[in-house]
Length: 289
Image 1 (cartoon, helix red, strand yellow):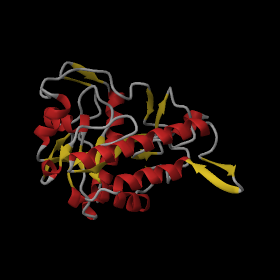
Image 2 (cartoon, rainbow, N blue to C red):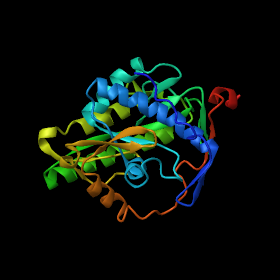
Image 3 (cartoon, helix red, strand yellow):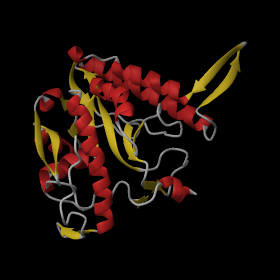
Image 4 (tube, rainbow, N blue to C red):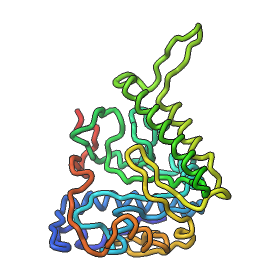
């Protein structure tokens, strides 16, 4: 698929909703939009479901593009589609784009997938390690099935919470050591591996089947979203997002109301990634030197 040509004037500084969007931020947006376009191309060719989420979904509906004071892209996919993407994307994305997970980047510690542009930089001032790919990125999160029965929901959620706490403990024990460290116990050698524990965690999330669920939940190590009725995602609408078309769930009103309340009234707040240093002209490798 041919890349969309950036419209004339898009990279110029402008004021949106009373907020100045600088030319530098516009260039960051253009790098992210290139990655979104590549991601959506893969998903369409392989019949994978994907939608804008969080601030990106709000931006689609309220602004027809980015929230003016935002600097990232959030996408969500059902667990089975997300797993397929993990198999496909590393082989289909061409340099400088890189599909980043714990399995493709040894230094990566987040628990969701990202696409990075390796010729750029998005370096966090408060990062604990700079051993992973630190290019400009977009986020991709899986939507997990949750049991329809309240009793089974509570039991499943408690198991997830306990395993997350266990993994956090192992992380504290291992840092700043490599991901796997060998421990000796009763004449047996066991690899205490953060990556292996995370595989167990994802297997637990996969254990709930579509036939037993009526809701999805976005579960990360930092937060858990409210339950989302799957019926809200049964239809997909393609709506304007800057100079691209973005897939959004037809039930976006209920989703945004649950997350933001009166979502059509703008509330200017600092960017979640406010501590990042962006550079669209130089690779993070050059800058880290």
